[in-house]
Length: 274
View 1 (cartoon, helix red, strand yellow):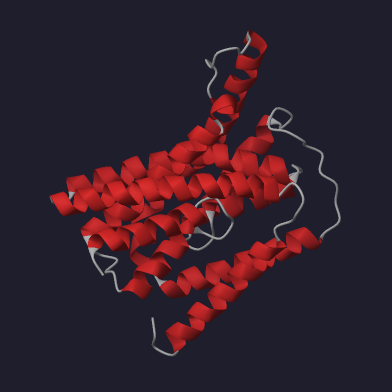
View 2 (tube, rainbow, N blue to C red):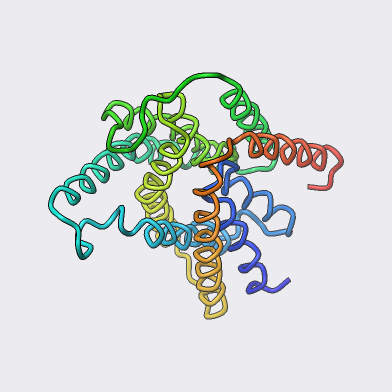
């Protein structure tokens, strides 16, 4: 399979899974393994990082009016609401910024493999099912109502997603709901929190790769651009569908999906197929 075709496939995988509670990193690791891509290949390591930018751009585009305080027609009161939203997002981002720098090398060395990813997928699936089985009423109906302490603790919980297969979106959504937010607010805050978190991680890891002497040829730059675009389009479609889905449905289907996928991958590893 050519680099361009691989880039399209992986761009779709990234876009479809980045904002669902199923772990995009885990899916990329599994896809790379299935497609025979060497996880230590500098280009594909760079690809998995940079292609996330396409997914993040889709969040900015989709939520533009809720994120950009200088849009036409927005009054001063609304601007203050948007700035407060950003402030809570940055506060929640800080724990991951610190711990990500400290543990990045360890994670890359020991956890970027199918078995750890599968275990994390299965455990996260059971946690989603347990969360949806409880009967409790949410008390936080919007990001504006969210206390600063809640935003910070969601940021702490997000750090669990440094374990590949856990899912950043699953960690933040589960964390938000456990701390009292409704399903929609938890998902929306997860999307907003993805912007500084993934951008920060991408910049940090890209810097490490460039510092290691990574040089790309024309074909590789083309593959990166195509993967970025494909990830943007597919992620935008997922966001638009997902935000409507959770208004009338719970996260149980994602829990069962995680358990099923993780079990299948463990079976394939046991049989020597991965």
